[in-house]
Image 1: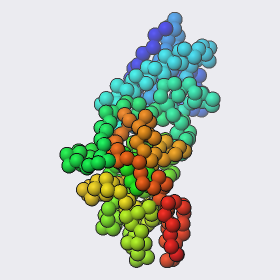
Image 2 (image 1 turned 180 degrees about the vertical axis):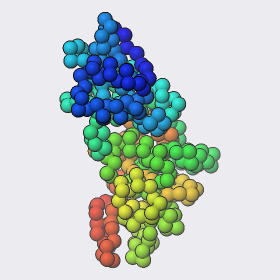
Image 3 (image 1 turned 135 degrees about the horizontal axis):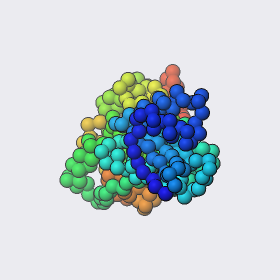
Image 4 (image 1 turned 90 degrees about the vertical axis):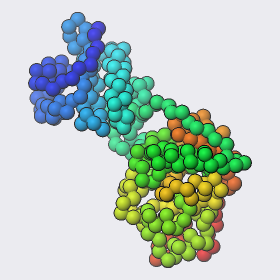
Length: 343
């Protein structure tokens, strides 16, 4: 058997492949349009006959989409399917060297998710992105590990600033739980957080900062909200505010609001004071799991995925913040946390 990768752009190739995989005339227009955007074709031949075929289509810059992976109905052999998939994934990895932001998707037939998981795909449905599966980026990075429990080093703080300014993701302690954090305007870094947590895209991410002035760069603060901020922050309170127009939609899941908080933790505040923007921050855990309150709770899962982990010892409160929203000057508690609100 021969399996190889090729570019396909012409009608002859289209006719050969459509005949081989049994496409119908009624799908011709859709297929032709897809083939116009084809980047690579994967074909498997045995004794001069196509026995399997897959193609990758995309705009050749940022996005790539695996339109379909097919095995000829006369040759249903899982091993051939695996060979084709390995070639596809290898080609994607080569392409990612040129364009590291590339995203690859596959639309498996019903019941085939287990097959694609073997090659590094995970379901898009789990992330509320619709059908199909997304190829996870399994390339580990070198995570810097720092112990700041006794002292906050100036050179380490400078390095954290550089990481955040260059689309990096860090883990740092707060007064409640440990947080995964990045620049709130870095959509690339926010996307990394969603992926490493397997977090649904319809769940917004809050921001942490050290001052009302910085809050106002991402949200509007009304009088009653300012009173609550002055009373309870720094502390374990997250308040939902109306977002500013230029706040990234990926951060707010398309909502018109955003959660903000000033944490009561020396390490967190030192970083937030030094950094010019609020930090998009969510608890350190895979979605559905308990939030980390000590580095040992998450080191195995997140080492190699984030750029830096700052160990500040076990968090003080070990319970998530209380979340509120002010509507017509009345306080609505959306999540009861470690802080009790006095009416």
